[in-house]
Amino acid sequence: MNAQTSTRSIPTLSRETWLEQVRRHREAVPSPCLAMFSSITGGITCDPTLMQVPVDDHLVHRGDGVFETLKCATGGIYNLDAHLDRLSVSALGIGLQSQYSAATLKELIIATVRAAGQPTILIRVLLSRGPGSMGVNPHDCPSAETYIIVSTAATPFMEKQPGGAHLGFSQVPPKPFPFSALKHCNYLPNAMMAKESTDRGLDFIVGLTPDGNVLEGPTENVACVDPDGYLIAPESNQILAGTTLERVTVLAGDLVRNGSLQGIRQELISKEQLMAAQEVLISGTSHDLVAVTRIDNQPVGSGTPGSAYKALSQALRAEIYQPSPLRTDVHF
View 1: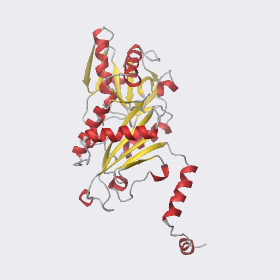
View 2: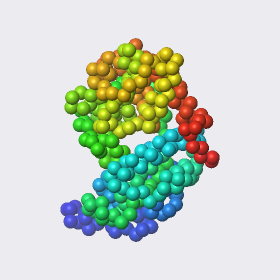
View 3: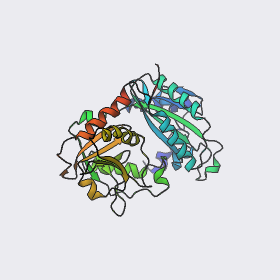
View 4: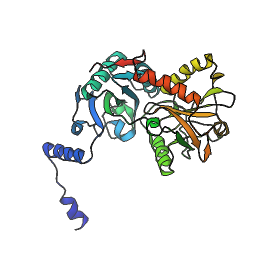
């Protein structure tokens, strides 16, 4: 069969047939998505067949939008205000004006989580430039749109692998400032880092500046405890400020006060400093806190999760999974 004959045989489908084909595809490839709010419809659906974004939305074909990923754990959304603050900063950074206030956005998030009906899930909030054209100019889009997607949550890394993680250094070039400091939807470098990590058999991977300073992973921040007992978080305008790492540094204040840590610093961390650290920590919404016990083929410290990790992980998980001021209860 030649190409012309083959093309002529492709049908133009009715709306009903199109949706039926989408439904069959979703059944063959189960979706992790449990509920979705779309500002286009003004409502929530729990049918993955209907969880769609218009193809001419600049979010789809240009990556023109910003987002946040949050965790709802045992019925409480963790650190909601910090995530919405960062979402606002990212939107401002690309000149995107949300159609909802922060208070309304909170209500929409809670309603979408409640519709999903599961107490422990992940939440993706996307602010999009909106539909308007297949061009590149944001001014082609008459109004922004908002999509909130609730999906199943993976088991945090240390619950699956309590012995710790294997970390490596990425060859993917870092994002330039100011895009590095915004949580925007062009995540191709992050995707390539995640692919590289899997291809190399690593648990996690972290980027480096051209002069060898530590940046971040595809979706995680890294920190370390140096040989003198100081917790060090990397300082760079090429790193997205991590909401989980910020909480870790706050909680570390208790370890300074009881003498378990000497202090807390935020500064550039070289690759060599990370390799020489007593402990290396990875933090992120999906994984909470992770102990790195091996970098490339070299053990970190004793090669087992250290005391700072154990204390900080316990404190962080108490904030996330138990009643705390940092949780917004959903009330299913």
